[in-house]
Image 1 (spheres, rainbow, N blue to C red):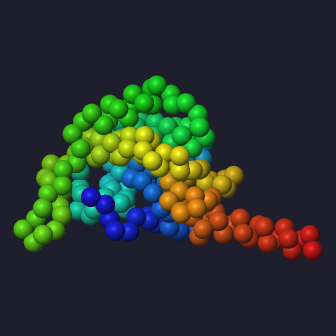
Image 2 (tube, rainbow, N blue to C red):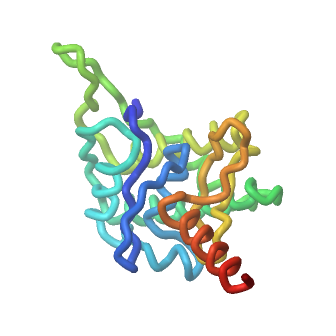
Image 3 (cartoon, rainbow, N blue to C red):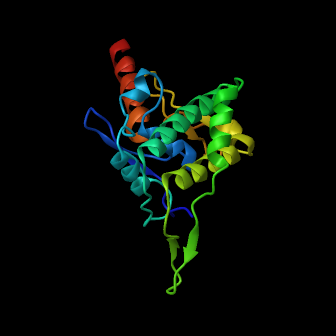
Length: 199
């Protein structure tokens, strides 16, 4: 159950807002922070509201309001960090770490979110959604991505100061930037300045 529009609006600490399409639900979770000093600057899963805000922004259909226990939140962080490492490994053709595989498989083993049809023909979420069910849905999406036809299209942004991961859904498969509004535009500006300076 995905939204028609899949780009998220990200707010960088430098004040710039930009649109980012990760191409997959599991990669959208990575914008909440992660392992390493670059991703850790964006950590929002240190509180339940951070996860709930992500739920409102991600590609899942609106109306989802899961309960989040402290233990579940810690599990989401742990699995998100494993997803970072797995997606980066796939992007660079490296082997997966067994503990990261185990973390994703364990999360996927739980029952996922359940969608339902309303009387007016709309989609809604079944009551009683939990963070564990949300995480299961994300983990199952990751398994599909990492084993599917788009696995070889997982990319890391080409900027040296950005580590966002995305699925390159462009027809020629040449997407380099997390967003042309941010990293792509900054590259163009630097390249223009370099040409101007040389001239």
